Image 1 (tube, rainbow, N blue to C red):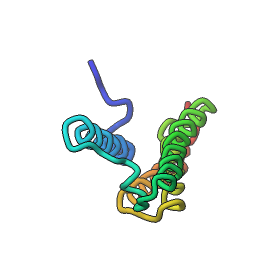
Image 2 (image 1 turned 90 degrees about the vertical axis):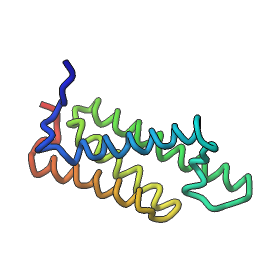
Image 3 (image 1 turned 135 degrees about the horizontal axis):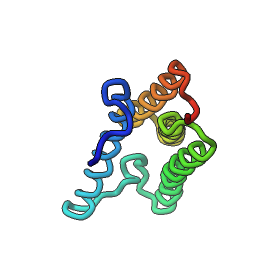
Image 4 (image 1 turned 30 degrees about the horizontal axis):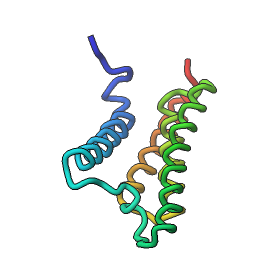
Length: 129
């Protein structure tokens, strides 16, 4: 039987990040396969020049790939998964805000990631038991 790894009551911030990310990926997938298509990079960059769009696309790809690698790397170094994901999400949103400016999605992701890290510091659960 499937059950949640962490208590929903005390780890709602972690599950909020999971559900938010699932919504982001799900809506992007629906638009890609069943809508009019989706240009992920256009939500970050307003450029119309193909060369500049390619550079911006690489920045977005780098941020997302770095989020994945950083999360996996920190988990491999025995960080608690919630801490690793929190640091990764904070880095992802911060790097995109730095490159393209703030958006509501990036602000919420950054605040949620930072909140997860602070929560784990307060709990003294930065490392995996």
